[in-house]
Image 1: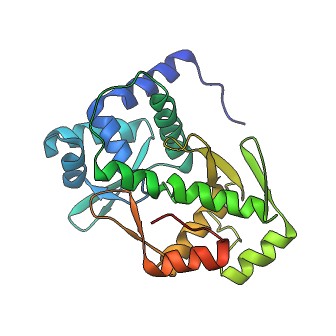
Image 2: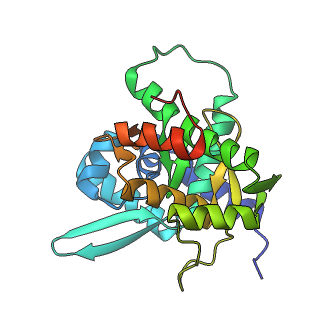
Length: 233
């Protein structure tokens, strides 16, 4: 059974995530990849020594996990639940008081398509969720969802692996509130499998130093032909 979280523990966790440098570290890990302390120091705008101290605190709180490979120690978000909490906080923050800041190309790229841990977000993630629902492949209700038999056949034909691995006990279908679109996008094992398949097909590719994604020419053609999605350049 999941233990009841006290107000003290909740406040301590929120305080850890509330530090600007640590918030930047957690945000930079939202694409699901593992990064070194030096890389995270660059993303958070602090020295490598300061970043190491922040990483130790985040690891102790089980917000990140750390593994050593060769001379380097890599950090990643500890679980999909941590990523979901960060995305939800981003959504809540987007409803807050507006702050004047010029919108740049990185902002538009993130809103167009990005990874939210291991699944797709932004306009691309929303469009995929809407397409699967409209074609009766998926039925969504609140934060959960169910794949129809028609949807299972469709995804099997598309090459999506739906069986869970021994370490992945997540629900097949669930939703995650998209901070930029303020609507739910598809998460869970199905959301992750769709993202993986689109990388395999070279429909999407990562943009350097960002969790934003570029949709390739093959991707635009494939999204239009198979999902009926157009206009996400």
